[in-house]
Image (tube, rainbow, N blue to C red; front, side):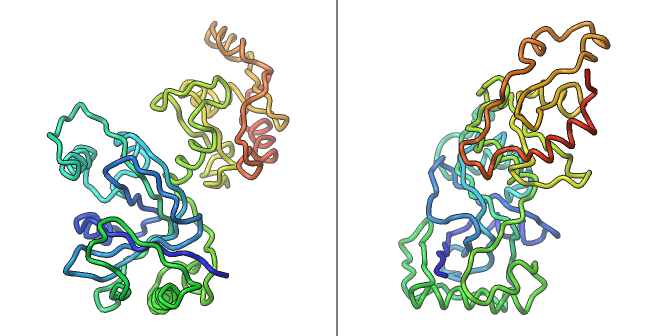
Length: 304
């Protein structure tokens, strides 16, 4: 199977901070402008190199998803996995790269390339960039394992990973093939948010800061960070869903418990939504898992 690999130029500070963080499940390789990224499909390798003159590949990860986010939401989703110590530092770095005056009130949108199973090579294992790499490249270059350079690059990465303690998903892939991304919390949030086209599944609210992702079956109770275990909800409905005052049936209908009226003498706005069909992602593989919804109905919903 032929796959693609990307080599992208990284910020040295981003690399140095992240390589010192133990047990990273995911990282956000972000760009200071809200650019679209379509060079890879989920499961292909995204590699990063240092700035010249250190023309070496020093790490990478499994490409999972690309999106654009306001800086504040990227920080909320990934925190220090953005390669910065704080949200303010992230905003300052964006302003620096954009060559604009820093204003703490600004909340610029950035391009996010979400990588799971990240790895950082020891210096002795750094890989020289392929001969075709040009010093004029300031963003990234794509390689294909159907070509000699791309295949050699895959083999170099694979040999380095076999000699390290990197995750099993990467260690045992000798022949070029897609690697199943293991979603972390941040990747889960972004994938669900975009699957629902950034609209609440119940109300169609699209003010992004007012929306939250919900695990149908909580991650701490044998739930997964998979899109089929997620819903995008307006924040107040998200809180009620987590507390069991509302649910979504396996038939994809929104239901509201009478306990809201009994306990809080309120809920008119929620009861007006009772019984309606929810909006689901276009792609069937991203739609809510009926078994997870049944679990929430039976184990969480406070019922009628």
